[in-house]
Image (cartoon, rainbow, N blue to C red):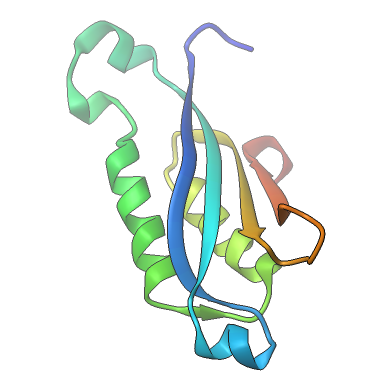
Length: 123
């Protein structure tokens, strides 16, 4: 990894949304847990201390919250893809990954999760 690459990690963002296809999932919001990792070149920010030279993780997180809390999703794949689109939207982003957990989705498991990745080199 190049030394100017910064890694932003959004850890355990706890939100509620409508996710799933069963009747109770359609009628009731459920907890989800979002983890995102975003890689970008921070060469300018490292030397300037100017917010305009950095990727604003607060702005990204607010967009994710807006998406999740104001929409309905049938599939975890679709929700994860839309969150990944937000995480990787800025031109500076070189790599992003998102994992979303759906706690208690299975009777004998803590959660079910799905992960997706974006890489600028593979687009």
